[in-house]
Image 1: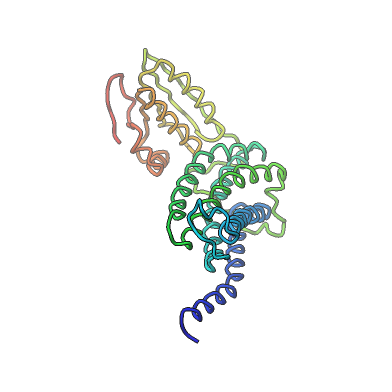
Image 2: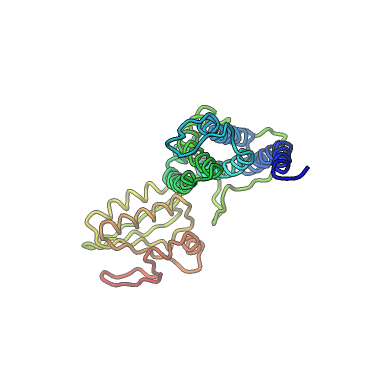
Length: 333
């Protein structure tokens, strides 16, 4: 048999026969990757269940709208009593990948806090706060892009756009902002459970580090402040990281009061993590808002210099290798 009808029938049968293998492959690979990355069997199991919730919610919405015929006048379509055959598998692969991206991003911040001595509840709170803005912004962009497909005349693309947009909305709000932290808080230290017979698994950091920091040992940071009229200089010595960032922020808030120029001397900083980078970005944003000059002093060729370059801060911050005098401009960016 040949023709469109026969071709469509063969395609649908092929999708049905191969779909289970795709599900098994994706779920198994995700479990193994998360198992090795976070050295826990609870983290990957919970991640898979939460991601499947997002996908299942998208399937339910598609059935309710396009198969049952709701919201026809609002979306401008006529229900055909079913869903496009290729769409469920397509949505599963795309949505699972997007959900896993959010999940790993948030969990990396949570694990970072836990490894530095925070309790699980405190680490979860830190991870959610540190990633909320980025996750929300990324979700808003994707929802806007996917929603464009819902305005097209083709019902196939309309189904895809509605399914993706609503799934991302549900995943970024209900699943990531409510269910994930609630589940981790309830499980407590069980989140990091790894059977002894899996102790041979290699240790893989969730993200690259630029300087070795012993786990479970608090870092130290000293801040020397010098003020001359409206010129304030902060000389940092030690590590600007998760634990010392609040101390640095307190000094910055005091220094910024009535200052026209704030200099941050980082030549004696030995380590900086994402929290420290976030504090520098925040200081820069406040300086731009208040019309204040912010200068970062660095030492070329050091690991801190490399981190600033990788984070692209050397292109947005005013940086120099010497402490500037009042009224001078020694920008090297």
